[in-house]
Image 1: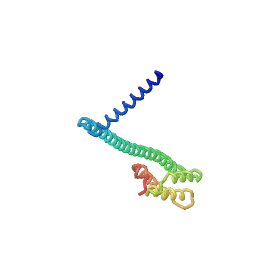
Image 2: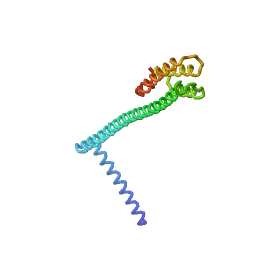
Image 3: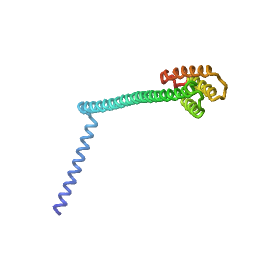
Image 4: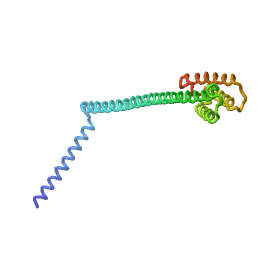
Length: 186
């Protein structure tokens, strides 16, 4: 016989013998587990259980924190947006109502010009939220003032000055309300 063939047969025999020995050892361990192996299994299982519980708890806490921070940030951004929007609205309404009052003041303009008054009336109306009572009051007074100074309705000087006074007070009331109340429906 060849030397290589004999060596190959011996290697195969050793592999089979080693495999059989390992199988017998596993069968012995599984059939009669000793207390050390059982304790090791319980310890390892407990460690995996604690690790799993910790991971799930940490995930839930992190998810809750992220959700609450998102809500807080959303509220803050919305509040900042509404505040900025109200500040811009205040500036615009003050400018437009001031110009409208100036162009319809009979002492400043004895004969108000429709070309200047009508665009100011329209711009004022566009700035108003008619779901808010104070804004509806301003809208009614602006319409009344427009009818009076453009001669579509005959009004006396004292009536026009009365409309001016009421419009000024209504505009003050709308401008100095906090933003949330001035723009939300009542």
